[in-house]
Length: 245
Image (tube, rainbow, N blue to C red; front, side, top):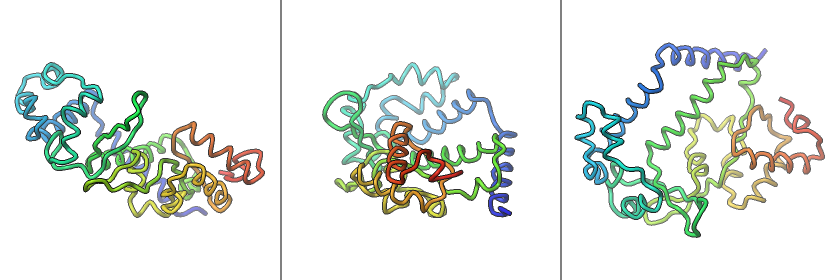
């Protein structure tokens, strides 16, 4: 009997049913989200420069936003706005961001720094929860909901720089996982903080037989490399020999 798994499955099905019954159309949701963002950022330097207040008062808010706010490439956005957030508050978002995500991107040698606000982290977390509730679309057995979840990302060990923390976005997200998720989250905080990729993969492969993984999350190519190492270290021919479910 998988009592806990059955309870979790019922809760997910209930939440999914409520969300489905109150779901607006994609266009309505996008307009609502745009309005919320404009209201939140209207008093920032970016919001004042592009007159978010006027956009909110326009008859067609979406059309007015498209007219007034041009598409910015990274270098333009960084040079005009984001670099100021390293020192000053209220540039493109209220306050100062606690995190900056580093990404090499596809061009240029200098790492790109993208501000990550607490609201962005909350949004990432809510998407993760939405993905969990979407499991209601699949008739999974109760025992599945008692399995552990492997989340493979960058190091959660972030660098402190001038009053904020920097790291890759997957590492920032993983470092903000809620406490209640610790019981099912693998590889766990200690291994997740390892900055060296090869060492992290090796440690996961060594610990793999001790875990009961039912789902894996991460960049597909990264997961494929990890699974190959898990098979190699544990002398297995299939990942199901290590994690049956």
